[in-house]
Amino acid sequence: MASQDTSRATEVGPPPPFDPELAAVLAVIHQSVPPNAFRSDNISEARARELANEGGLSNEALSREGAFHVEERFAPGPEGAPDIPLLICRPNGTVAPTGAIYYLHGGGMILGNNRTGITLMLDIAEQLQLAVISAGYRLAPEHPHPGPLADCYAGLVWTAEHAHELNVAPERIVIAGGSAGAGLAAGVTLMARDHSGPKLIGQFLRCPMLDDRNDTPSAHQMAGKGFWDQSSNETGWTAVLGESKGCRDVPPYAAPARATDLSSLPPTFIDVGSAETFRDEAVAYASAIWLAGGIAELHVWPGGFHGFDTMAPNAAVSRSARMAQMNWFRRLFER
Image 1: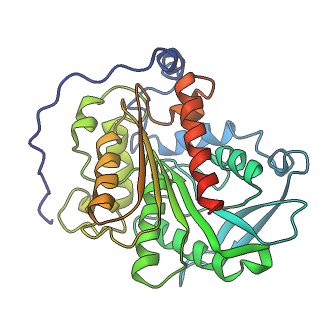
Image 2: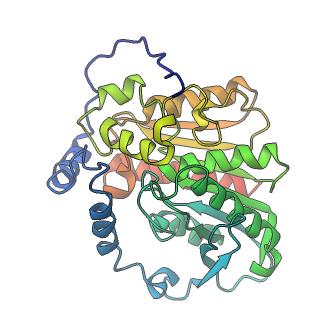
């Protein structure tokens, strides 16, 4: 087996405190989903639980009383792979081609489908009259790397090639994702840059899962705390990378924190909570983009746990995060 990359030397102090409003919500979440809830032996159970919680996400509900035309289509998958399910939500009443959000769902590489987390994207799209194309992708461990990433890239290529058919302006597509979906979005963005793929107007990385080494100070600080802790993160990365997880030769498309060249990327939005596993890898990624001369907007929300803005949307810090996200999209598409 390849040698492990063990570079952490920083000693860590106590974890940052959770925002009081968020802590109350987190206590309720922990009654059914503790920080270390996700293990290799209960992935099927977690998938079934998630599916049961998605009963309200019908096409009718996603249409938002006619604001969106909702359809399901399939894009050709990578060679030898199944077709990719796309959930397409286009704003009704628009004549000129619109901008579009190409969205990749979260779920730690092991959970989710193209309806997971789409509500946040529709909130933004409804205000700005954008289309949302949400891609499903094969999940680990049944389909390890490069399966999920290849699906996401193929879906983006199809979206760009069929943009006019979707009444989308091909030069006005932003890629977006949350958690594992944000990590995949970052990988797809690197691939598009390196392989002369679709030219993206921006990348939106919400609490991104970027570093398979799982060894940052924040990963250690938040072990056993919050939502999706170091143990659950180990489950996700092991599912997608197997024995190569943490080794020196992990490719940057699989774990974008490994990238040594972050030049020539589109404008990037990154946000993360101060009290979550992914804090330090998100901050490091923004810093690397700046070091390469790129544009990145970074928010570290005080006392935020992983996914706080969707799990506790009424908290003051969540409202601030949602406003910052909306403002970034607005500036991006009004340029």
